Each structure stands twice: as C-alpha cells, then as structure tokens.
Length: 400
Image 1: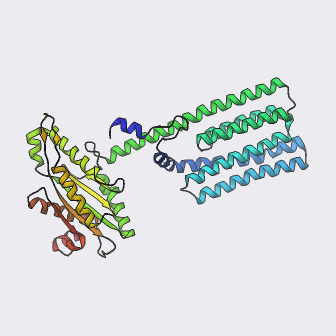
Image 2: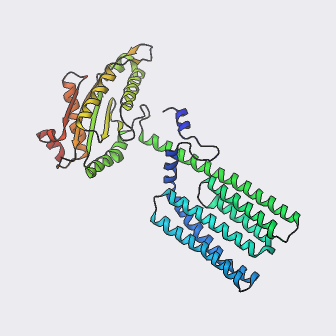
Image 3: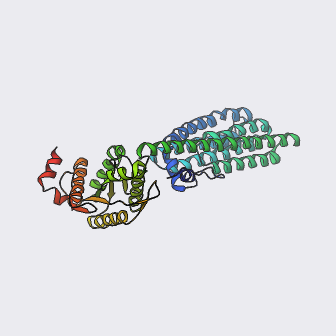
C-alpha cells in the first residue's frame, strides 16, 4: 500500500471530524472505549455532585417552598440520570452506542434542568450565564461524545438560555446582548477546541495504526511477517477453528529456483519477483479472513480459516497458474518469469479428534511443499490432515 493510499484510508471528514471510512471510525471508537468510559464515569459523578451541591443556592435564593422542591427534584433527576448512565456503561462495556447514549442523555437532562433553574431564578442571569459558559466547555471538551451531537446540544442550550433571558430576564437590553455575545464566543472557542481534540485523537490513532502495521508486516511485500504469525495470527485462528469446529487450510508456497533469479537479475530482480508473487497471492484470498505471511526468504505461508479441502485445491491451482502465466518486469527492462510449488494441508475440525498443534500443521504443510518440489516444481501437493496424521513422520513431528 502506497503512502497516498494510507492517507486516503485515514481521511477525516472536515465537518464531522470523524474518519470518512465508517469501519475505521468504529475501530477508532472501540480502541478508545476504555478511555472514553473512564472520562465519562468521572464527568458523570462530578456533574451529579455539582448539581446536588448547588441546591443550596436554590434554598438561599428561593427559601423552602414549592419552587425549591421543584428544582431539588430536577437536580435529583440529573443525579439519577448519571447513576443510570454509570450502570449502563458498566453493563455495556463494549458498546460504543451505549456510551454515546449516556453522554447525550446526561447533557440533555443537565441542560434542561439548568433552564428550569433559570426560569425560577430570573434575577441572577449574569451568574447563570457564567455557569452556562462553564457547562458548555464541559460539553465540548470533557464529556466524550460525537462532535456534531455536542454542537447540537450546546447551541440548543444557548438558544434556550437567550430566549429565557428575553422572556424572564430583568436586566437591561445591553446586558442581554453582552451575555448573548459571550455565550456565542464560548461556543466558538468550544467548537474550535473540540475540533482540535477530535483531530488530534485521530492523528494519534493513525500513527499507532501505522506503527502497528509496520511491526506485523514485511516491508517489501506488505504480507504479515513470521513473528505476527506465531505470536498472534495462527494461535487465534487455530483456537477459533477448534472452538467452532470448522475447516482450516494452510498453504506453503515457495518460488522455484529463486537463487537463479538473484544470480541472473540481481537482488532488485529478486525483489520484483517477490513483490509480484505476493501481489498475486493477496489478490486471490479473502481478506481479512485469510492471510498471506512471508515465512522465509522466498517462501509464503497462507492461513485460510473456513476453507475446505476442495476449495483449497482449486485455489492453489489458480495461484500456481497465475504465477506461471505472468511476466515480471525486471530492473534491466527485461521480463522475468517465475513458478511456484505449493503444499496444501486442510484440517476438518468437525471430524478431527486428534490434538493439532501449530508446529505440526506447519511441518506437515512444509512436507507437502517438498513433495511438490521433488515432483519437478511448478506443482502442487494437497492432503487432508486426517490422511497425514496416520503416517509415522507426522506423528513424530507432533510429539517432538
């Protein structure tokens, strides 16, 4: 994948400040979910305590009576909404939608009750405006939510406050205009800060994703590397195939007479052949389910969950023919040709009762590759695990 392709795949929508690719945006949200949950939890607790504590100001301003009790009930509603949100995100720890719903509910309920406070205490509009400015910053910066949702709630609350100031306010018109301008300025700075945070978080995720890709990919062919195969890929695939009792196919593909290519065309020619073969193999698998690994110098290992024996045999022949029938442009301007030998091993975990290990699978597939090479190269050898496990050679490998 070229640098331009990488830039396109991580493109950010300029309006929503989210990745343009919905799948990538979901991965980003899932990656940040633990941080989102921690931030949301702290904010919900703080805001609920803040609302309850400020009931003292209601009592001081209104005295004990119906208005005070109405506002107290509203403040308790904010605290209950926060408690319900904490319970939900504890139950739905892996749900991005649940966390967003909790954030939005807390913002909407909090702003609605604040407007109720403004309605019952219209003589303190300057203090209310100051409080609203603080709450707007909390919505934009501290409560993790979609930017477009935060903007909608914040601007809606600002418009509601200005309307209440006009309807219920006892201040001068110039004071009302000043409050409106300050609130609009707070929204502007809040939106700018929120956009910057959202962009920085996604830039950080892009850098992390790029570093991760570099750590698990071969730099020349863009295939997975051997370390990733043994530490992550094959253990996970094998465990899933056992648990779901599905097929699993391994193919070991080796470029024939690769030393001759290097001798005749130099290492640049060898690199061109490696990249060409890797591209042909990757074009014929179903990513991300299937994977191509550069296992050695000129050897590739293909890991294909859910692929049965017949499909694997057909696919391997298609790969062999594609390599043999194509030309590779050489660094000297001359075309090169290459062939591959392939060993194909398929395991049906719905029928296999024997213990299957990673090393045994690779060794058995490698044995088939060498059978193909001994048969004259540019050929394929396919076999079921059940047929190979009965041989003494594979049994020895399994117990080694």
